[in-house]
Image 1: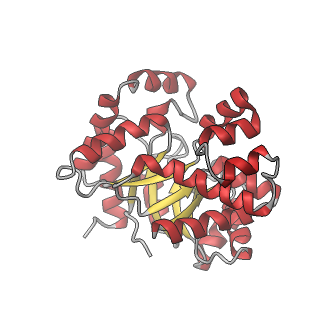
Image 2: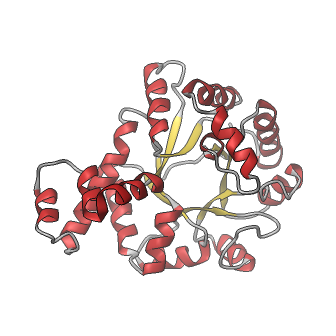
Length: 292
């Protein structure tokens, strides 16, 4: 079982995602057009002792992975937590190539899966399993040779599969990540109580689940009390995101509240300034304990 760091660094700010301000999101997207600008921020976080980068499999992350791979001494303790698949990449491919064409686009041109797609049998059980595994492997290529102790399913796909009742796909992901990569599978969701129940029905116990967890219930689908019940039950290893509720909660108050919750192993946050990075790190050390 992987021991997760108390504080994880996210990547929303690098790709123009801000849940409260479109203007700020656009400004950030412009600022981080160059990989050097991303690395400057990651280097500040790394210097502060934040070793884990929880990131999407956006094409730009390939460049970050290349930088880390190129300097193994400097980044000896740098860990990635990939979050896959990057939804926009696949949505764009479906728009350009159609559903079956998109799958072909991301898979090797030879082999049984390509044949299965050509034959129109992609929805047969074995083909779905095979396609899922190949897509995971394709997403993981950019992290070859790097530390990836935990791998997440992005919330867009987690919640789509949850809504469709096709939670067996999450079990396929779980088993493939454990078997092929020897690391821990994890899941991002906008409804932790519902996902936890579904994963348990698939035989996945004490899963790592990343969800919005904050004092005012901001974007906590499924009900604030249901989250607290799940955390107190000991059935989940939670990674809390949106702990500041996009700025609605003062930082000290937000981290103090989170620190007193059972079941929260880590906090993931995004920041683009050294001051905000250092401030959050100091609060987490204060309330949750500095790393050993």
